[in-house]
Length: 150
Picture 1 (cartoon, rainbow, N blue to C red):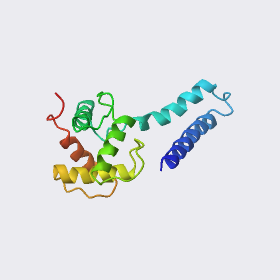
Picture 2 (picture 1 turned 135 degrees about the horizontal axis):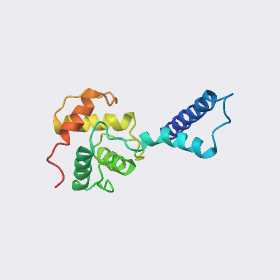
Picture 3 (picture 1 turned 120 degrees about the vertical axis):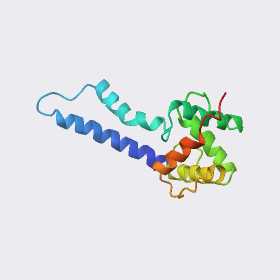
Picture 4 (picture 1 turned 180 degrees about the vertical axis):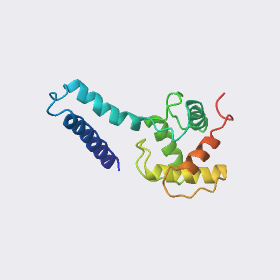
């Protein structure tokens, strides 16, 4: 799964760079390497933090929850990055909801585990389909209300 995700990100970045180069072909030379690197970074950056609809305050609540139940999410900063999702995956694994790699990538299996978790501990009655659609995001938002983090 991780290899497939990396490959998909690489292909997406390459297509974006190529499309930018084609758009200026004939009118300018290819962009310097630094601009190409910036374009690739722009494609990858949104994947680094996955808050699933949470603002930074609610994301901090999720991080505090993970910390308070002894799953270290790293820095409590309201940015659900790799460390936060690795902590969540360890929690989900220990609850029997997740059996994939602890990689911090929010893929289908992580979303399935989150949906199972929210159904059990929040009584949200979500469809467990691995899709982080509006219902899942709303339940995740609601679960991370003001009762966590002091």
